[in-house]
Image 1 (cartoon, rainbow, N blue to C red):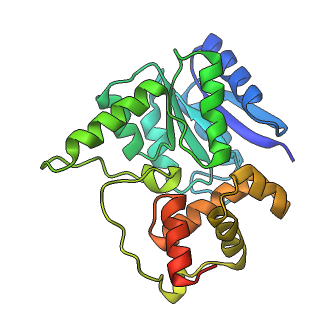
Image 2: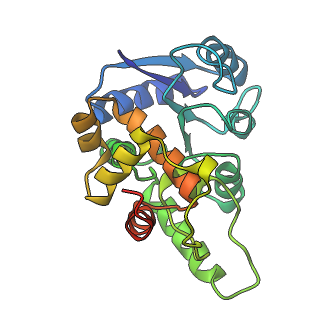
Image 3: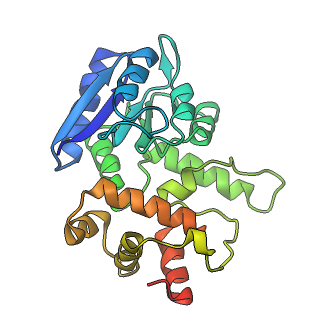
Length: 245
């Protein structure tokens, strides 16, 4: 089955460029849907899973979202897709804090600058398969600077679901407690966690389990949420200490 990708970008040249980046980034068969405005994107999403991801049988697994659009801002769509089962990546020209942090707060799983070289964008998108957040080098440096300056001061880092979904860690300590009964891992999640603890990549786990990489990614997000951790290292330590694997 082809992996469904939605690219929301109003500039036809940039949209074509991003299509090439996506096709080059993954070995899976890719089926790309293009949208030039928010209305078109919403219409496509409603046909493939609904904004809550509760309807339909074949939702998009990857969505690239431009921020400045003819009929609004891409952050509106990110906020609407909080429960939609896709990896959502911002693709924009804006590298300033006023765009970066609100996008992360709205649920972006990554942030890429369209001005980056083709090879850089491909390399960053491929990080999805390895369970890492796609971040342009300039954005990664900006985030690092922000968190470094925030440590020990009254300022707080933006509270977003980005860390949990992408594997980034924060300075906030994570309580090492066994999850309650209703948050215990499913057999599939336990299997994924076992492989994670042994250092396998998402692509390797997918091959070992005979499932798609994006399915493994969904399991990992669920594991992080249930265990209240934000990286594979934390998950592996907790799994070992609490006998979860």
